[in-house]
Length: 569
Ligand code: MSP
Image (cartoon, rainbow, N blue to C red; front, side, top):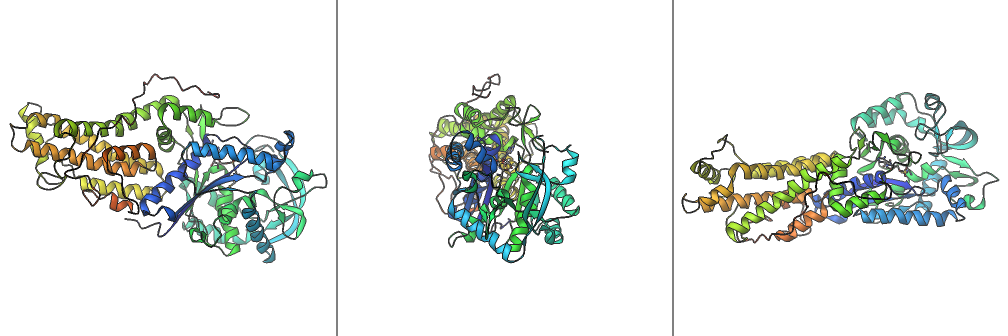
């Protein structure tokens, strides 16, 4: 089994522009980071050694404009919107360890110190810049990209402006060969693979110096002059918002007690901002003599009816829509849909209501929900709620006699199994699921990890159909040892579901917590996942344990349900 991460795990999300209202895109990326963090906390058994950072990016020019339009200071406007992000992330149950705002002193002071150091070393120098400015994205677009898009923003389609200014430049050009080597050899793992190739292709076209400051104009309103970070030693320039924003990942943990989290294990984002993270940021860190992040993961976009979500189309899935789904189907159902059906790989994903219902019913209501209640109901019906035998041993798995007896019971009532040669090796299946889910999590393939966990649920369902415990129950008293086989079969089902529930917890924290509470098998704190998940190990469900029947975890949805009403539906 993989031993990564060794000691600590640090995952970050982009810091979001405080001008936007939180929507599905922001929630999605933060959800991925939350699932990864929850998994690693469980895996290590030491929650304090995992750090999840999110927050808001506040020093953009458009914040100043939007605030002025409302008669507010940039700080007041940023305060309001940062609160909206915090509220949205709380509603989604995210477990970030910190929420950084770039207007905070802790960020400004350290970011400024990093820039000062780069200036002193000659990694940042003064020069002239002329280029195509994309005001909607607050970034310069290279000449070839501008031409390709007819001098319009490649992201929003808004007209680009020609700008000339004196600027400070970061010597990105010095790092070209190093970056190629680091990314090619996965020292900096850029994923998914399609994104890695794109980045490598673009680096190979040559790296130039990049501007890292903006001149403060004489006609800037005073609010704007005070907003942002000044270039150290030069009051006439402000640090370009992107450059200081990237620093957030380090400023927040660059303290005595948190520096052990650096370097980040994963920076997660969408493909729109990969270049900054995969190229500019590692080069800055190298120049600063700091360690570089291990993985840069850039997922694709949520789209709607085949089109990109954008302000101009007004087709965002807003937080209110997600909330309406949460209210009707539960938070965990929304988390499950987003993680398993979202644009985690290289392809965009459409949010489709009918698909939501299909996945909800298949995986949750008829999947883990139904499986758990079937097992608990049979234990209640045949053994008054008690597990009366172990899941291994003479009748257990992999080699015990219970499956053979179950097949005999089927024969006896004239319903033989189609294929009498199957074996169900639960210890092996559980160990493989833990190992595969862990490896997938390390590759940040969270959807694959979730399906591995669900695979154990499917295995239990398949096993119940095959071993037909209800048939075996009718043979108790007729077929010798039928009662023992029945009890062992149910214990194996319960034990396998206990392990599945642990693996499903990062995506379904509430419902799996509820299930384990009902079954009385909440894991103790401080024990690593591999030990918790050992089949018939020290934390197993075993003889003498009472399994209570709880409420249904997920009520079945009517496939004809209309989408829940929300302001933007
Ligand atoms: N402030 C910068 C990031 C600085 S990080 C040092 C920024 N902010 S943003 O508010 O525009 O957020 C962009 C991010 O939001 C994307 O990279 C992605 O994580 C998320 N998403 C925004 N729209 C999205 C979709 N339609 N689909 C999926 N994720 C999306 O860029």
